[in-house]
Image (cartoon, helix red, strand yellow):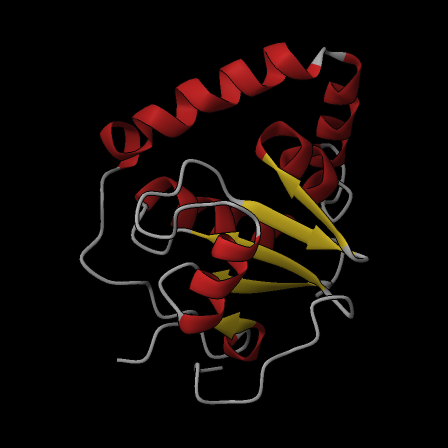
Length: 145
């Protein structure tokens, strides 16, 4: 889906707002696609018009994002809470990541922030968003080329 197409209602399906230029984020999207229970999520690159708007609406700088955003059933989750919410969409054993909620949020978010600060060092920065495979392309909102 491109920005020029009608916008989806954000309360109908879970939405993962991700940095399409981040190698780690792109890998994470591919991981979810490979391990999801079913096609329950949409993926919105922060570089798209809708992505920029969602980021701004949730106090995330779209030009320097420090977290991803996971929207589900009208609620917005960031940082480690986002990972826990996202885990509900994964098959076992990955779904067990939801058990992280027993760890205090301050500690979880400190670990998340450390990873987020180093994500480009870990897996690099891309020049453009990956084009998703044809069988899942309809679930993505990408920037106009």
